[in-house]
Image (cartoon, rainbow, N blue to C red):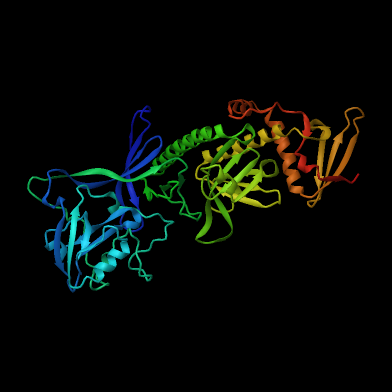
Length: 494
């Protein structure tokens, strides 16, 4: 693994990529400040202008075994041309000497297929008869999508599955053969040769993964199965890196932390820009991807990716990051921060094999479990919840009780609707009991906890220093037990 100077903020290394459809192959990773580049070695024409660089017309006959002897990838639905991706050894396509891997198919028997979808081109070739005339043009640099890895979450199926369909990014060689059960070996070595040409093997871009709002995970999607020394990165638009395999645990951890650090820095910068458009009481404290534990999970889908955001008085849950102001109104769910309880799970509290988890207990008493990839992410969420709760408690300023925090000596509840507070009178030193009844006991308990947590945070030097560095100005802490005005829906029973 290579490290460059900190000024360039880059990191490179050579690893294996597993995409589930082919044997693992070598890739080179290049990590910059805002993007992860995945490169593969490819053979490209670096000099000379071959005769086949312009359009060529080639006629080949279908063989009883092997068909036309070629496979294709691409299609208009992916805004990429249909190209020849594999050529069978000793078959008609190779024996013609005029067809090469990287040839873009422009016409089939005079039919213009430049704007055709992948399956449409397959159908035309199927029905082409025993002889087909192809008009092709070689792409000087073999396109990187000839080896596009498939994301494990995608719904594409191989061409030999019972559905009879294939992924436009998978080779469709079986569709083009006369006998669908033919298993002839396909070769990727059919590169054009001509006097005066110079070909070189170079690292070319295979995937570019923007890191802003990207997801990083070692787990098999939807499960609690952690891959050994491997991870994948998924961009906000769904582009997947494929499973990147490192030679050791330390090297894998090093990459995870480096990518997570860059992603976190980009998120922090983005939050700072977004907050310019929001009032002080609606500032974003923190946001990022988590995996939510399914309530009624099945074996192959225990977790679903969610995007959480702590903003103002609320915790928002989205299926995708909010981009516009309108997106904030379309959250799947939102909770008031002082009516929920955040807790990091440890030991026996963990619900499965996932290690870095936290729970949020809602105002209805429901526990929602979330998982993150790294311990550093878990600590960021803990700090963010503490900060959001503190800011909101200080902002409220609605006095509901005349007692100070120091006077509260104990409390108990019946688990349903009633809670009893024990206060000490500062003059008589006697204990005064107050029993209150609420329509939502959990919300009240969480609110009281939030106020206690905010009060204790005022005495924590580390929190005070981080609070002063935060983006949102807040009022100085009060020493009186306060709470939101909506909780005034209570009745005294004593």
